[in-house]
Length: 414
Image (cartoon, rainbow, N blue to C red):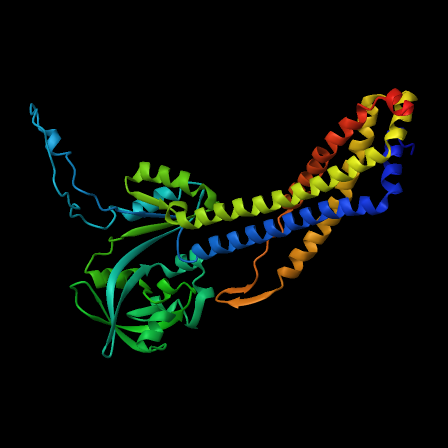
């Protein structure tokens, strides 16, 4: 295959000074490999923390929000021009349960974006074992649907989670509760909800999510048992938990559900605003570091091409005297920058992948995290080589433009 004369000259210049070419390529290689490694680490940790937050939090939670008294009724009086003032407004006493919850569930299943739905009865309770008492929450659930949404089975330490449906007054407790009350599978525990009667329940299993607040307070019971604790009928449901096929759509779907049902639909994004803020801050820090690395690599290429132009100034003058246009000279030096970027980019991708692979095998062994979470996300590699080539082109443009403006007559006379 015949090589264009401009390309041939560009390659000749690169090969004539191999050390400078290698140093420039190494700068790009380092920037790209660091870009891939840092992006893989950030996405891996972000995905892990998002997954951890979904271990107990649904994508959307539908519930009856407490309402604070307002001027609505006062302003409804006809022919009354007086100014209404409401001092020290209080929350309006209302039923915390949802009206027609199973009708709502059936209508929500018509939404193609929804993957799983499960009702829940939440009861604030007092656990008692011997002389020790602690406060907590009993979640009355359909344990099969709960397992589909939150992998209850994967969190089990002892017992069988399905036994809350098989054993009368069965209770699945968190590891923190078990440790505080010295409980094991098969032991009895007294549970009291509010001013209701105390109920003796049997521990059928112990689970651990590694989230301390949950493991030390939350237990699972059947829907019927939770309703009995609160003295409610079989239609009483306090929450509906919803998981979507794509959790990124949660804010939009939540607003649609609020409009349809009239109840509060809290999506996971608003429930974990601090987590999302931390993700954004980490992204800004990471991109700043990568930007500085690529900028330094760009200055290295700029300096090398500047030195090449200074050393080859007479050769450039001869080329122009022989009829090479300024555009052709610009092409020669821009091609050098592109080749440096390609060499550094390809090697950087390979090094970045290998470093990411090695780091992903570092054992952590903390909670459910066994190994350092790393992501092998293909768009990161495409972005890395694109940024590397763009950086080298930008770095090579000004020296190339400078070379194109060389006056052959002045140089040859000098």
